[in-house]
Length: 137
Image (cartoon, rainbow, N blue to C red; front, side, top):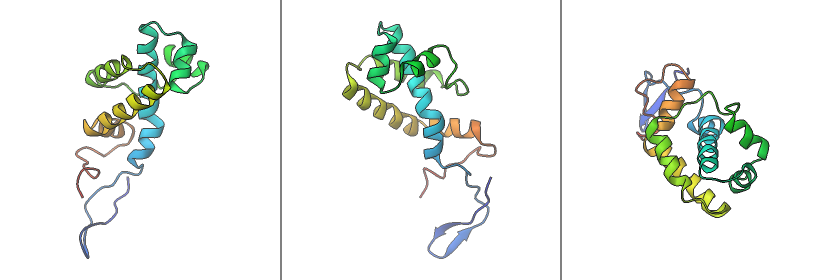
C-alpha cells in the first residue's frame, strides 16, 4: 500500500491519504472481466447455447468457456448476488457478437457505478476500507 501525497487543491497536499498500489483498471482486467465472462458463459450455457456458440459470442476460446464452466478459471472472485442478477439479465439480450460487446460494456459500467469494482479491489488488496479515490476529484 503506497502512502503518497495527493494534491487536494493547487499547491496543497494531504499526506494521510492511502492510495491503492494497483489501479482500478488493473483490477478490471485481471479480475472483473474474467468474472463477467464466467457468469455470462454459465448463463448462456444455461439458456441453451453450446460452448462453441458461447466462445464465439464472447470472443474467447472454447477451452476458456470450458474452464469457466468447470470453475477452473476466474474462481478467486465471487460476485455479489445483485451483480450476478444484472449479468444474467444482460445475458438474455446477447444474440450476436455485437450485442455481447454492448452488454459487456453495460455490465462493466454497472460494476463501476455500483462499486462492485471497489469491493473486488478491497478483496485483493489490503487496507482499502473506505477508499473513495476513484469517486472524489
